[in-house]
Length: 247
Image 1 (tube, rainbow, N blue to C red):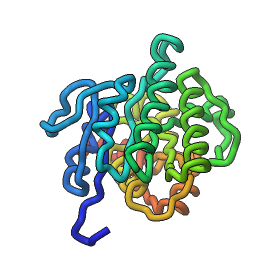
Image 2 (image 1 turned 30 degrees about the vertical axis):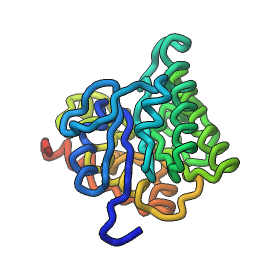
Image 3 (image 1 turned 120 degrees about the vertical axis):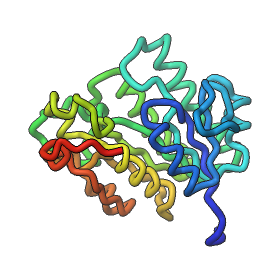
């Protein structure tokens, strides 16, 4: 890729909880296209559709190099009515549309709920077996395994990020719930981690946890550091001690 050329990135689910914190920075760094069910603020050229709309997915994938896939039912929900259409069938549609379009890498938003049945005092390594705490998390484990299959079978690069407790800097939940302090992912660190997942060369199949600097490293960031060069900058303890609210 030319030093002046911007990587062609598709961001799905751009209007969800995390997407709006990414779009402005991604528009500066990449040739960005977004995909969502509703118009995305700041992107008048967003492709509209849902994960059942294969034609819209194919349109969105055209000419893209990397897909950052956030679109999903993003927490526990009725399995057959919501999780299966979006997180199973819709995920397959996304992978297959990416493969057909010649996309070389998928960056996939998984969740720390995939390991949350481990005892809370135990530090979890990325190679430990999944222990999902919800059916939602079980569908995210399916996505990680689907990424493995597409990588091994078709050579599609895959970075799965088990996202921690994503909350904005001024969220009251950070002071109310100790579990959030152990697993927090800040907006700034989400941007940093996802950019490393997009930009790092030769990722093959990579699975990492994604948190900021937490009260204790309940989930190990060793893989994110080693495979992606990720270095979180936001510290939950310092944030709460200062009572600071950052943009």
